[in-house]
Length: 603
Image (cartoon, rainbow, N blue to C red; front, top):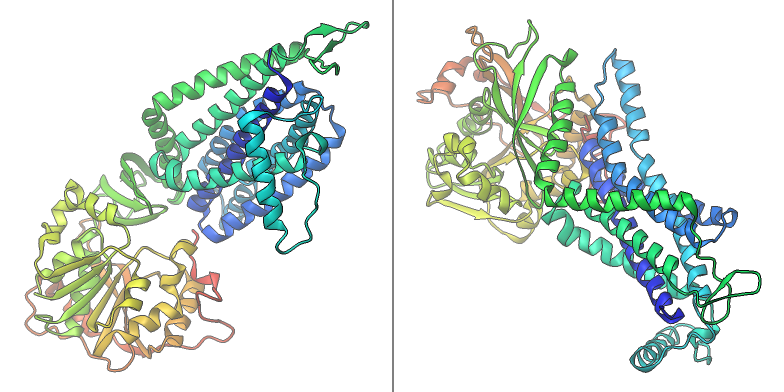
C-alpha cells in the first residue's frame, strides 16, 4: 500500500503534468489561430487573457463542487478528450464553406473568429478547477506529520533555507523554519504548477512544435492527460485503505476516513480514458498519415473557399515545415466557365507560405520579370555593382540578377527553406542552380538586423518578401526598416518591391505609403507585371510593384533590351510615371514601437 507521503508526492507530480498540458494546449491554439487569422501578437495576447480569465472562473466555481477524488478523475478525463478536440474544433469551424453576399460573408467570418476561441475558454476553465482540487488532495495526504525523511528531508530543508534567504533580501522574512507538515499545501502546489507551465512553454517552443508540429503535439498532450487520469484512478482506487471504521467507512494509514469508491459513472469514464490512451498512442505511431489527412482536408476546403462560388478544385501535393513557416504545394483547377485561368495552364501547381499564395506556375516568370527585370531598367547596368536582395529564398530572383552580372547580397531568415528549394523539382525549373553563383553572398539572418550591422551601400534593393499577413513581419513594413533601406542606398539608388492592389486593399496602401514617406522616400513609380493567363493572346495586368526613390527618379531605359518580356511590354513601362508619395489625413505610419495594424492584410 502506498504511504501518505508517496501519494502526496504523486499529487505534486500530477500537478506538474497537468500544468504542462494546460499551457501547451493554449500555445497550440494560439499558433493555430495565428495561422488562420493572422496577427500573432493579437492572437497570443487574446489567448493569454482568455486563459487567465477562464482559470479564475474555474477556481471560483470549485467552491460548488464536491472535493471527492472521483471529481478530479472526471476532470482529467474531460481534459484528455476536450483538449485535443479543441484543435479539431477550430479546424472544423474554419473549414466550413462561407457563401453569400459580402456582408454575410464578413459576418460569418467574424463569427468563425469568435467561436474559434471557445476551446481556450473550455481548457482554461477546467484547468482552473485543478489547483483547488490538487491543494485539497495534498493537504489530505499530509498524514500525521507529513515530514519527509533522509534525502527528501534534506532537500526540503535546503530549499526552504534558500527560499527564505532570497525573499529576505527585498522583504521581511519569517523566522519560522516552515516545516511542511505544519503548513497548507497551496504554495507548494502552486509552485509546482508554475514550474510545469515553464517547462511546458520551453518544451513546446524548442521541441514539440519544431519537431512534431501542431497535430502530433495535441496527441502527446491528450496522451499525457489520459495517463495522468489513469494513474490517479489507480492510486486512489487501490491505495490508502487499511481498515474499516465501525460504520464501514475505509480509513487511511493515519486513521483519517478516505472514500475510495468512484462509482459506475467513473467506471464509464475509465473506459473512455483507456480508449483515449490507445487512440492517442496509435495516432502518434501513425502520426504522419493522420497529420497529412487532417491537414489536407482542412487546407483543400480552405483554399477552395477563397474563390468565388468555390469555382476551384484543390488537391494538396506536398507539405513541409521550417522553423519559420509552413510550405504547402497544391494543384488547383478552375471549374467555373468564366474563370480567367481556365485554358492554357489548368491544372497548375502553386506554392503557399503559411496562409499566403507565393507563386503559381502561370505567373512565376511574369512576377520575377516585374520585380527584377523592370526595376533593372531604371537602375542601369548592374555589372560590378552591388544589389541587396531581401528574401528570395527560392533563388529565382538571384538567377535573374546573375544574368546581369550583379554582385548580390541575399538576406533571408529561413535557412531551412533555402536549402529545401535548392534541389526541389518545382524550383529547379526556375532558378538554374543560382545558389552556386560566385558573386552571390547569402546571409541567413533577419533583414532588419543585417542592415543595422552592415555599412554597405547598394545601387538597387529588391524586396522579395511575403505579404504583410501577420505581425511577424510588421518590422519589415515599418518606418525604422525603410529608414535603414534609405541609409544603405548609394547615390541614385532605388528600392523595388511587390505591393498589394490599391483597389482591393486601400487601407493597407495608405498605411504603407505613409510609412515609406515618413522614412524619407519622396517618389514612387507604380507598375504591373503582365501575362497571358488563359492563352487567348491578350496579356492582362497581374502583380503590382513599386519602385521607391529618396531623390532622383530615372525613367525606364528600354532601348535595345534583349529580354523578350521587356521587348513585348516596353510601351506599357514607358508610360509609367513617377509620382510624389502622397500624404493622407488621419493616417499614421507603421512603427515598431507604435504599430499601425491597418498595414496588415488579414484576408
